[in-house]
Amino acid sequence: MDGPSLAVVPLLLVVDDTDADQLLADIAISSYNPTARILQAKDGEQALAVLRAEPEAPDLILLDINMP
Image (cartoon, rainbow, N blue to C red; front, top):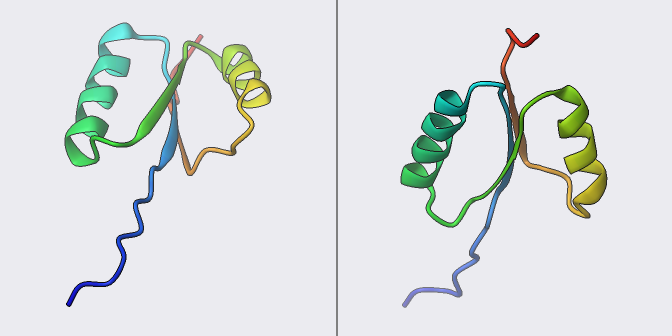
């Protein structure tokens, strides 16, 4: 007999200035966990704004190391 299912919906923030890389990250994350919530930002300032606006802290932040 199976117990109750604990559905965990991870929250991720992807920060990258390249649209293609953001799309690739979105596809990879969604294929691994289709229920994941994915927030996106183009730069550090936008990432901070997203974090301030989101009531929940992300479980993971993926950050491009080479941004202008």
